Structures are given as structure tokens and as C-alpha cells.
Amino acid sequence: MIADDEELAREELSYLLREYRDVEILGFAANGIEALKLIEDFEPDLVFLDVQMPGFDGLNVIRRLREKEIPAPAVILTTAFEQYAVEAFREEAFDYLLKPIEKERLDITMERARRQLAEKAKLQPTDPTEIAPRSAAPRNAKLMVKAHNRNFIVDEQEIIFATINDGLITVVCSNVEGTCNFRTLEELQSSLDLDLFWRVHRSYLVNINHIREVIPWFKSSYQLRMDDKGQAVVPVSRVQTKRLRSMLKL
Picture 1 (cartoon, rainbow, N blue to C red):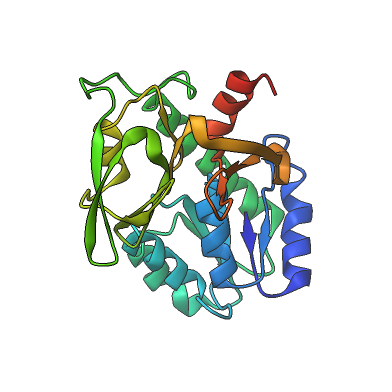
Picture 2 (cartoon, rainbow, N blue to C red):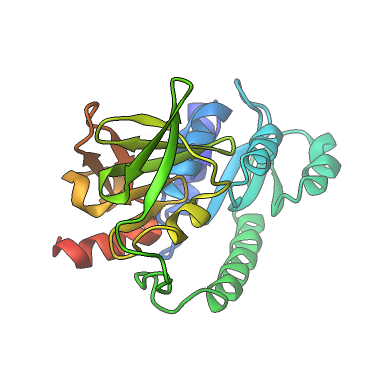
């Protein structure tokens, strides 16, 4: 993914990256706010961030990812100024490229990125579609949802989806929408039927029986329209897209 507020800079970097056969450009952002949203939605392996951008600058995007507890991709900061280098590496940026970016220097960065991604892949399950291990969660589990200063008890079948934002989990059910006391979506999922609830994105857990529509999206990815009153649209991460295709024969 490429984030830069200058269109010419985005085009130049895109041109250079298209020469690498193993690179797919997932999207472009013109400011830090767009960059943060795209990183959350698309989960790219590699992000080129301009240091100076409206909204959040590149360094603040890295900090916001950390605050939101979103695993950061390998971030390569790009800038025409040398003085940000120390702060960039303090924020654990993967690399720091000076504009105009030279092809020879980019080759070095991309080779390092390949090695890091290969090492990371060794630590992950060989089949990205495999489902989390089954737990002893009881069938027809119940959940307490807080809404309008009241505590509602709902059956798990009534849960349409749950989402987390800034550490707070919102649960959307057939007749009520509110928050729950679980700290993470992992904890919530482990208390429910794992055959029923699918973690389609790091920020979303959905009940597969409440998926109304599969919507083709950007770069061969998909979104899910749920059957709640607002017909919410939920993104499917790149990792889970393969499972979606297999499950629905897409």
C-alpha cells in the first residue's frame, strides 16, 4: 500500500513497484487518516508511508496502529528530508527511503522485505483457512449486552456480529445493540460456538447464519452485508478471503 499526499509521488513509486512480479498494490492513500483505514481494511504486508502528510503524518500512523493494538505491517517511510531518520527507527520503521527513490536502493529494501515476510510465514499456520481449535464452549451460550443503562441477556444465535474499536467491543444482535465486558474478540469468540462465529477481520466477528450478501470489493477481496436493521457492511481480511472463497465456492 502507498500513502503520499502528492499524486506524482504515488505514481512514481507505483511505477517502480510494478516491476516486481511478486508485488500487488492494494491501494493508495492521500493522507494519514486514509492510510490508517486502508491498513485496517486490507492488512497489507508492506506499506510505503510519506512522513509529511495531512491528517496523521507517517510517524503518527505508526503510533496510532500501536495505540489501537493493530499489528503493524512492515512500514517503509519515504521523505525528501534526512532529519526524520532517527525518529523513524525509534518508531521501529522497517526502512527509510529518501526521495527521489532510486531503483537500486529500492531493490535492497524489497529483498529485505521478502526475507522478513518469509520468516514471518514460517511462524504462521500452513493453511490460512484453517479454523481456530474447537473449545468446550456450550451450545446456545448466552451473553450479557449492556445498552441504555440496562443489562440484556441474549442467546448466541441472536448475535449478528461484534466489532472492536479502541478496546471497546460492540455487539449487534437481532433486537439490541450494546457493549459487553470481554476485553478482546478472541475472548468473546472462545465463549461462543466456533462453528457459528467467524473472525473475518481483526476487528470483526460475525455469525455466519446472519450473512445476507457477499459483495465483491477491491483487488479480488470481499465485504459481507449482514442482516441487522442497518444492514452493516463488514470487511473480509485478505487472510480470510481464501476461506470465504472455499466456503461459498466463489
